[in-house]
Amino acid sequence: MEFKNNFYLPPMAKENSIDGIPNPSLIDYYEEMANKGFGLIVLEHAYVDVRGKASPKQMSIDENYDEKTLTEIRKVIQKHEVKAIMQIAHGGRNSKGSEIKFGASEEEGVLELSVEDIKELEEKFLQSAIRVKNMGYDAVEIHSAHGYLLNQFFSPVTNKRNDEYGGSLENRLRFLIEILEKIKNEMPDYPVFVRLGACDYVEGGNVIEDAVKASKILEKYIDYIDISGGITGFLKHSENELGYFTSEAKKVKDETNLKVLMAGGIKSREEAQKLLDEKSCDMVGIGRAALRKDFKL
Ligand SMILES: Cc1cc2nc3c(=O)[nH]c(=O)nc-3n(C[C@H](O)[C@H](O)[C@H](O)COP(=O)(O)O)c2cc1C
Image 1 (tube, rainbow, N blue to C red):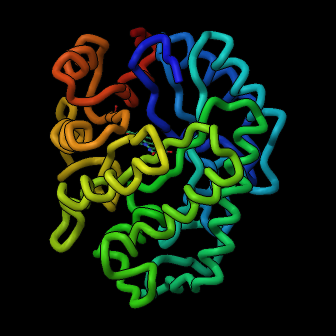
Image 2: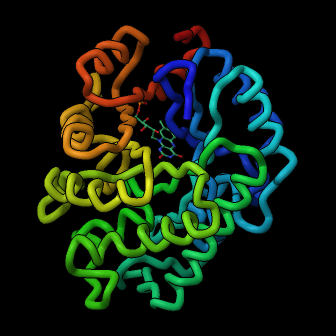
């Protein structure tokens, strides 16, 4: 995929949808962001299943998705020669979509997903990815970071399963891999990104060696990986410094053939360019700083 530059807008939930249907004002918002000069915009997370809705005003890519508005959003982004991709997600134990929450393992207020549930959700991810493609988006991104469902499976802190989806790293990654296999079988040429919660930054959690091992498995299925981390959010030890995932991203870049994206604490084109020049990653994201009205690349 060709981008006009290597700067991207990372997904940032606007919390502006009702029953999953995006407010039409999001069309103007995404056009405003496209005008800021990014080569790529990743739309905020959309839920693949209402039971995995992470916040009350999250948008849907499940069966009730708003094809018309989401297609309009795609068009206003691409009009500015910016690539548009949608991030699809399931909140797992962090969901707020129904009374009952599902996660990798049982805990208070959370039920463990059965293998049958997992297979059903894999199909939900696949159908959502097909919708994204059919609406003309350049790619789909699978959200496997920030403590959401697929991150819960990958992390040994939240995955205590004894079946083929728990235990070894390969098993903890199986759910994500099966989703990727399904998408690749159905749409072999469609680009897929994964946002990976690379390291957990808590005791007993995934560390950089796990992230590299996982990335080496993932590169059989995808070309692009967006390195993020932290199972309780998108920060590392509450850090907010320039490029706080740089060492993780660089390691994955050095040890795989994946194109590596990275966001976190970067505020300007100059800062982003420096990270590219140092070959820390292939694309740099600027999120919160880009929300300022006067921000321009
Ligand atoms: C308001 C807000 C909403 C976010 N929503 C998402 C999201 O939907 N999906 C996701 O993967 N990350 C989300 N993030 C994390 C960002 O993509 C990004 O990783 C984070 O803001 C760090 O980059 P920055 O320092 O450039 O803002 C969100 C962050 C913020 C501030």
